[in-house]
Length: 127
Image (cartoon, rainbow, N blue to C red; front, side, top):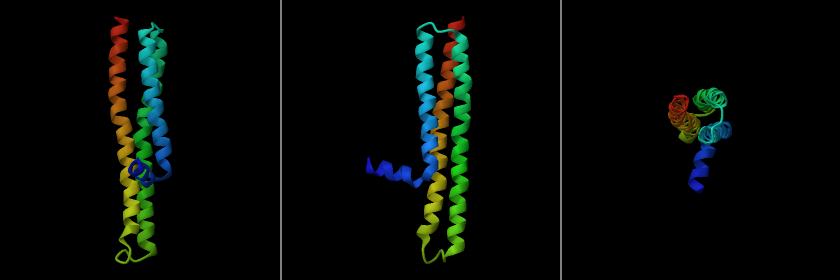
């Protein structure tokens, strides 16, 4: 668990919104699946799908923002000190860039699959 927390800290402050987006995405998915099973109107589930689409789009964009912030940190560290003297300064910025990108994609890719599954179930529900 300590390693996981350290991993999340590597990504910096953008990890919190990315995790919130992922949580909301899956909460909406499971709520929509339950709504379909209970006979909820399809229009409500279709509305949830639109919201989920926005969340799926937001996750990699937040990851990309983390990439930009991480690379800015890297260039700032390189400008402030000799890279040869302290390579860890570069590693911190690059780590932030890669971790946020990875987590943003890790939220968006399964979220896209969940949306496709929900769309399929919604079509079957209409038929």
